[in-house]
Length: 129
Image 1 (cartoon, helix red, strand yellow):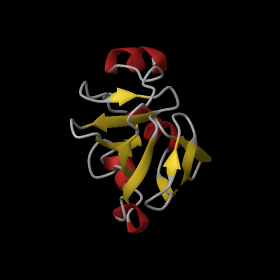
Image 2 (cartoon, helix red, strand yellow):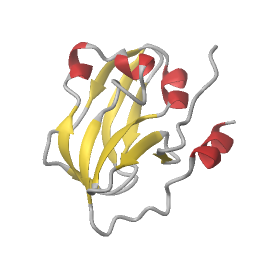
Image 3 (spheres, rainbow, N blue to C red):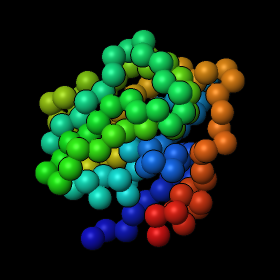
Image 4 (cartoon, one colour):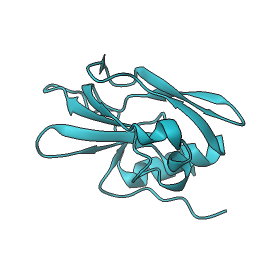
């Protein structure tokens, strides 16, 4: 088993999703290295369409593996602007590159989005230790 990584530039939701927020109010969302390891080999990812809006903590889709079907929770309030279409044909990208090619959504973060549930890399690593 390789050592899990939690990049410091990301923020983490307690339900094992991450968000990379850009200065322009857009963000990228995915699942953590811990989550993909717990799931095992990802076989299918069900994601919403562009234009869908979610509050922080709301379920935005599911990820299916040999072991289980797990809900995906939005780390921060926002509207989906793009879905990673590559996951349709290659869901294993979630396993091989959870913080890179395995990203799930691009969103426009709500102006007044509550960030209180988001954790730093160190705090999330302590949660899953």
